Image 1 (cartoon, helix red, strand yellow):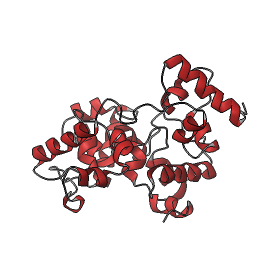
Image 2 (cartoon, helix red, strand yellow):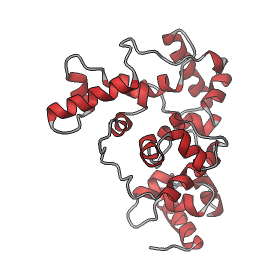
Image 3 (cartoon, rainbow, N blue to C red):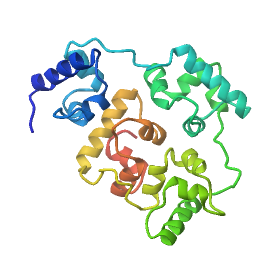
Length: 248
């Protein structure tokens, strides 16, 4: 269905009235009979811009966390690790906030580290004690898939003898779903419907939202965006996708 700009804005106002607050892009996408979040991103500069044009007062974009609480989580994680945490460390810790509230408050992970009193240059990449390369990790998925006759779940990987833990995959690939896609399997996410032009537009949209060229970590942490594997399969590599989007 094709919506006019005013119809799209009316949907925001109606959903805001139902919820009693400005809706998130995920709430709009999940609402029955409403346009998808990607429709708004294609028509407006960003979801925030669409909400503003609809005349709806935005809600607190940091979610349930205050700025002080977000910084305290960084410092606590640094104490546990004995070094400034990387974004991979944050995403691998289920007891910590995701990157999303940090992105909304600080824009980038490096800016959040700086605000917490750390030098981003000292945040070293976490080295897995098992010492697996990316290729070896993906091979383990492919081997277990061959044993099972289908792509494994993260619980099955965790329970399998002599296999890397699911947390190893989360630290290296940001999510189990992304690891499955990197290994060449269909994760069940609807990704094939994107044209190359749409993928590049989404990449530019994310760059506009972040105010910088997005990293793989930022792409995987972003809501309602294709994974790195989708870009790699379509363009050959993440760098090639950035170059095609004129973001290099």
